[in-house]
Image (tube, rainbow, N blue to C red; front, side, top):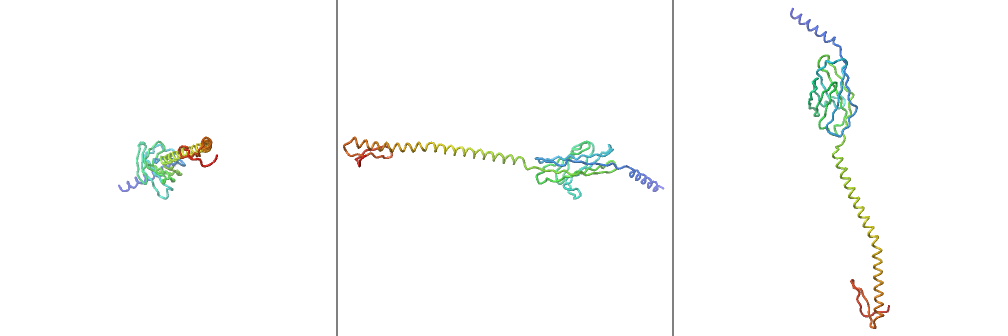
Length: 226
C-alpha cells in the first residue's frame, strides 16, 4: 500500500511538471565590437516572455559556433546582481543586471579576434529554457602604444631631414653669392700686380721686377718691358 502511494505521488508530480508551460527565451548581443584595449566587454541580453520569477541562470560564451564546443568561459549567477568571476580559455568577469549579463574578457590580444556567442540558460525555477545569440564579431586593433611610438620616431626623423635640407640649401646660396666676389678679388689682385710691376719699371733706371710671394709683393731686377 505504501509503495502504491509513493508511485501515485510521483505520477502527480510528473504530471504537474509536464503541465508547466514552457516560456520562450530570447538572447541578443551586439553584431560587432571593435576596440583597441585588451579588456573587452560583451553584453548578453535575455528576455523570458511572461516570466518574472527566474532566479538562477547560467551564461556560457563560445568562440566560433557553439556546436563546435569551443567554450571560452561559463558560470552560473542569480538575481542578486553580484559580480562573479570565471576562468576557462580566457579570464572572464561577469556583471549581472536586469535582463542582461555583461561578460568582460581580460587580457585579449589581436589573435583573439573572432566570433563570440552568448548562451543563456534558465536553471531555476522550472521549466528549463535556453537560447543562444546570433554572435558578435570582436576585433582587437593593434597596440595603440606601439603605433604612437612609431609615429613619434617618424616625426623626429622628418624634423632632422628638414633641418639638414635647410642647412644644405643655405650653404649652396652662400657659396653662390660669395663665388663672384672671390673671383673679382682675384682678378683685381692680378691687375694690381701688373700695374705695380709697370710702375716699378718706369720709375727706376735699374732693371726691376715685382713678384708675389704668397703674402706680399717684392721687387727685384727688371726682366722685361711692361
